[in-house]
Image (tube, rainbow, N blue to C red; front, top):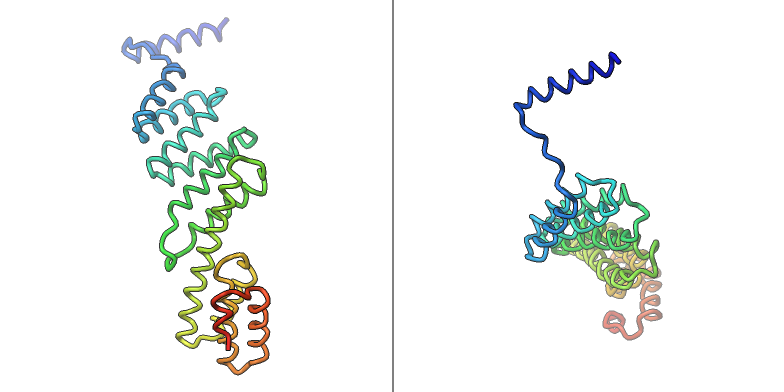
Length: 239
């Protein structure tokens, strides 16, 4: 009885402190969603993302909370707010790891990094992150509707990364930094065999080893080039 009286007094004090203003209830989830999709369809992606975020934060236990995060991430992606999209995806993965849209979210995270891949001469960090996401998607969900597109992106990214290595290796050759050049060319041959850079890497290895007086090793790479890429323009350049 004493506890009830105390609780009643506390509530009375809080009500008086509020100046008589009523506490407004949370906005219905359905209303937030309708407005969010309305803004999304009008291509007001920033506003739509904010509304989807509001829906998820107010109703985190709702069956729609996962969908709200998906739409928030997608809206931010369309708004080119890739960092914001990735944050939404990370939250989704943390709270909904078994949801049906996990393959799509892996794909979307890969695309967030992929859209930020820049000139081949710059740091390839984003390409490595994108490659990791697409590979994870293909490994975990090989039958997903996003797997085929991810495989294509993997090929593009591997060629991009190999191109970055090739660019640096050519500079090493120009500076007669043979050890570094050889190491870079060998990394292409060993880790990016399926890329278009491999024939040139084999050809450059023959040049490097001849330059440092190791014709036997040069001959081995030349033979590898002839055997695996008989019709390549780099094979035709062999002496």
